[in-house]
Image (cartoon, rainbow, N blue to C red; front, top):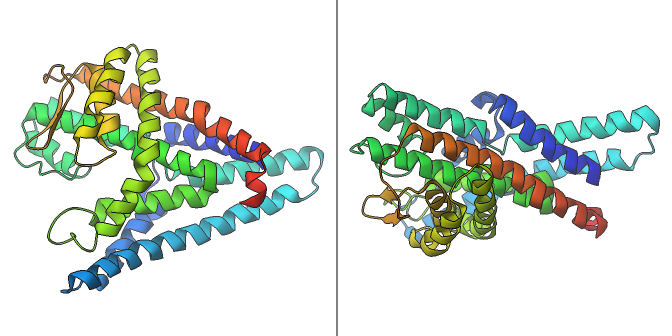
Length: 330
């Protein structure tokens, strides 16, 4: 099983870098979002306690569904691995199994997808289309973008790239190590629930509390581990890695989220810039004048971090856990 899992990680990252996200009608995360959108209104209530219980039911139902589907698929692949194929047949089964797992794992990863969306924001800015940039930005951030100026739009875009390194790359890879596709998909399901109904607004304050807190728990370790690897990535792409480490340590805890501040502060330090969310936080000591170069460097850091995380954590941990017999029990 171990060679299949290792190859599947390589396939997943290569596929994402080459092809990006499939259309929504083929994307499991989009299906999860549509299911959440249909269930959430049914669980709304005038009673706060009932609505909180509805939030628990919502997340547990979605997570259980995707876990069951992926656990079944993992077991089918595991069964194929136990069959006594020999020669070319064995190699073909191994590669086919790895590609199938990698294809599904790829749908939990969003490297090129984030690059593409962030590039659209930057393209709008290059045409001085602030309203278009604000509209595109509103699709990937929770803040109000209506009155943001050019610099705050770029800052928010770079912050989103930083957060996406965890939410859309290293988080799924982290849980894939321990629980296979079920782990990666449950992580993304919880992340999707948090992004859709986890906002601290009157509308979703009760219904979204459970998803938001599950997301906090699941991201606690990945966000900090990712930030450490981002420091190494900043060194590779020629950024200020010393500042990256210092700002991560100093400003990582400053955000309302206990996790989001770490990758954002690490990126701010690496780029020698200052990220600011009005009336919420300031991360970094550098310039607030952002350029196209900052954007391109942030994208490079995202890609390098993805590869480093897979090479330094995901693959080695799969190998170690396989030798310890973890995958015989999973």
